Image 1 (tube, rainbow, N blue to C red):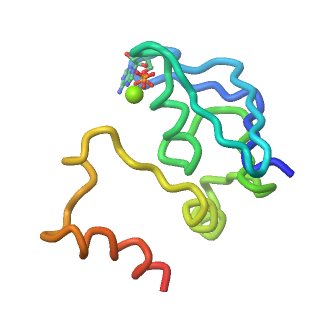
Image 2 (cartoon, protein in one colour):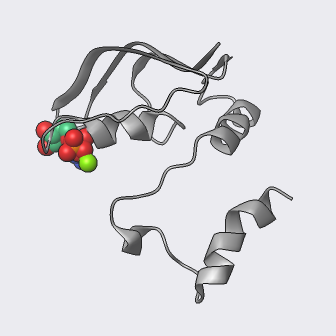
Length: 110
Ligand SMILES: Nc1ncnc2c1ncn2[C@@H]1O[C@H](COP(=O)(O)OP(=O)(O)O)[C@@H](O)[C@H]1O
Ligand SMILES: [Mg+2]
């Protein structure tokens, strides 16, 4: 079972910059993987695809579930499984205390 499978993922930013092209990746259940590369290699662009924040071409499967950004239920299910921590904490934190900030996700998942 794959926890993640990318098939032929490609993405160009609106200015035409092709950040990803022909990306194939399989991560098996239980594996821990670090994606390494220099600044501008496309790590952030790749990760932002994993829960549909960015939407390129190709196929993305999370725990056997195919990502479909046009299907709201699908997107919700994927986002329960793929959490992203942003690089700059100021983009991420928005509650007045650490406790409330940490609580926000689980609270909204019931
Ligand atoms: N909003 C954007 N518009 C145009 N090009 C971008 C944008 N964000 C990133 N890029 C370009 O896409 C490539 C990959 O960037 P990025 O995914 O941020 O790389 P990394 O996270 O590995 O440093 C770089 O060449 C970068 O300049
Ligand atoms: Mg980055």
